[in-house]
Amino acid sequence: MGPKPKVSIVVPIYNMEPYLPRCLDSLLGQSLKELEIIAVDDGSSDASASIALARAESDGRLKVILSTNSGVASARNLGLSYCSGDYIGFADPDDWSDPVMYESMYAEAVENDADIVMCAYVREFGSHSREKTFPLDHKSLLQGEQLQHELTRRLIGPIGAETSSPEHLDAWGTVWNKLYRSSLLQRHGITFTNLGEIGSNEDSLFNVAAFRRADRFLFLDRCYYHYWRANAASITSRYREGLPAKFRRQYALLEAEAAAMPPNVPCREALQNRIAMNVLGLGLNVISQSNPARLRGKIRELKDIITAPTTAEALKAFDSRHSAAVWRLFYAVAGRKLAAPLLLLLYGAELMRTRPKRKERRHGDNPHSASRHRDEPRGTGNDAYELLPPAEKGRHSI
Image (cartoon, rainbow, N blue to C red):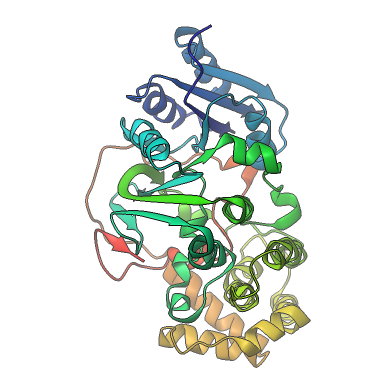
């Protein structure tokens, strides 16, 4: 038996053969040696399990769990049950980490007695890279009521000027650029909700539960994590039947967390804004090429979305003054329940989303695509905004 791990990293795997070696090698090569990696293969049909098992034979810090196909949330939850480190992190199997990521984040967590530590990250598009940064100081410690006001509330939804950048709504909600004190997760039984129940946004739900119960949060403005986005254009390509009902279940879970927040935190407004802004993601699902409905059927589907009481109320209350002109038009049409014009706007948004992007900084990564976990969409309900052509190059702050 070696020393107790300082950090446990959970990696859910499903058919990631082209990328998995890069991910696992970046974790096994970390400068922090007191590390354990829990790789959960969720019934892959390619060589993913063999790749992980081969590396586990030569490095005992890697533990491979073979499971039947149940989805990314179940795989992560299974991995959590095997973690023994003081802090727990997550990595996606097509991403990679800088060698000093976990040593640096763990040291800062211990020094600052933080329940959660978060770093910035780099989005890797295959042809170019863009840093995702956050509007906090280089090193920021938030605690108590400030943490709940500034971050937990923002995970629930944006308010005011935050609504001007819908593409950044869930940038705070990712789990793979954070370390969580293991006792925090275990004490409160914090786990992931299956996407089959909520449609998307399982990371943000997990974070709302964790942040609401945390006392101290530390942010580091250092891009340690590399988020692979080369196959992101396929996020909304597969039609998901029953998505609006799943989103309503997601909203109910967020509402339950919001109800436990301090009464002076504007969580209701934040959640309503999230609901209004999620109309885009739901609409893009409707116009998916794999949706078997004809034009009239798609219009009826859209009508059902924007006339649903919760969504209609959110759209009526939504203040779009901070939004760009194109989104002010989008929200106005949706708020007036004009399904046919909204359909045209959605097709325009889809055209912008899928047109070729400008080339920026190149690197040598393999551009081949791989399946997402059990064909689940990687993005959140507002991820579609982020796929619109960027207005500027390089470092991107929110």
